[in-house]
Image (cartoon, rainbow, N blue to C red; front, top):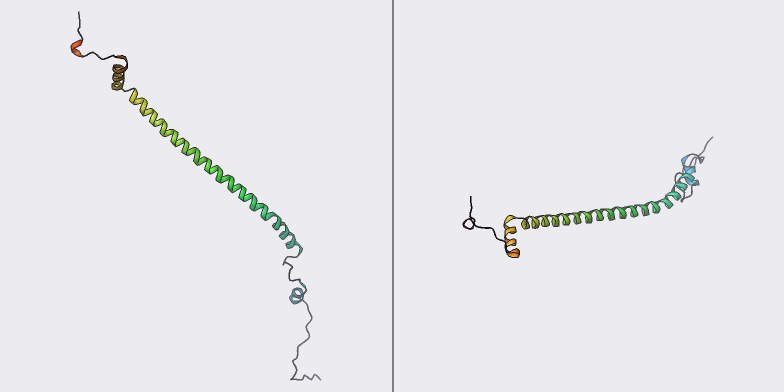
Length: 121
């Protein structure tokens, strides 16, 4: 006959198998994947700073290239403006009115008026 005293707590004996046993046996510092996760963690710990350093170097190189492209573009625009100014100055110098004025000032050459020209047969 099974007699249970009601004043004392009765707990059935449980065999430690399954999840409880695995959780109790595991160290608190151990990762879920075991050795594989430890190896992956170590590799990531080494490679992460390396990848971040390479990323910073590449980002710096890209920004330097962008700055040099912008500087070259600005210089090209400045030279285009200077070229336009020089073409306008050349057009002013080669204008017929300007040529006559300069010939009169520098060489004392003047165009003859109609009353100065006489035609002989």
